[in-house]
Length: 293
Image (cartoon, rainbow, N blue to C red; front, side, top):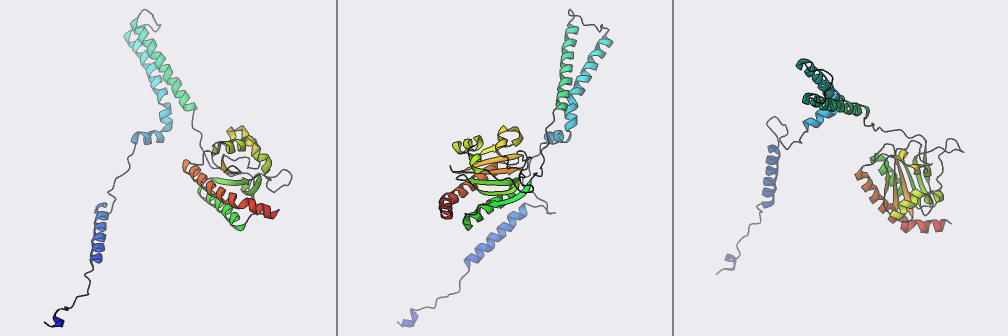
């Protein structure tokens, strides 16, 4: 037997199974995407449900609020018309069942009229964005490393771009590290921002309560809280404030320009940012300030 007969040539040309697989996959993707469209290209997927009653009420708010008044007025006219047509005297007679029924109807009609008047007098207050009254400032503690300053500025840029934040103050170890955004104007120096008294701020009831609880405090409508006097460095028309603890040594004060402007997602995101900022400050700030001294 010849040795050459045992060595048969082997074909090295691949059959490209992967190319066939990806070709079939792309074909199936095109087919599935085409199933979502009609012949004219409109979407055939699931559509959100509409509450027609809620939409109609929201578009006809004045009519809905006045509806009890109309119902009560027509009820009163109906009672008077019924007594006139039936020949019953308009004076109520306690011994007559018809009179007792009419009295009950009159009471219900008057109740409807009063309810309509209450609905018309009580209206939800519209919430709008306000422009903070104050001066713009950017104060950064001089003894901070560059990467700490960069992270503080990143926090400000992120909050001001995504949320309704217009003022930010970061205090750590009784030292104001950052005051940026719109601040209240100083009483002594016209045109400059009011300086944050970090020691007095940390001794206030608001900051003490936040640091003691270790959780975020959200003042959704700042004008309703008497503790706003502890935040004189914020613009006078600041609408909402978040007091976010930075571990047990600091606090971040975030002022917004809209009542209830910070959503639940914003609050959760601010908590995560605070944890990251606290980790950076706790490992670098003490050493940096000691070196500065």
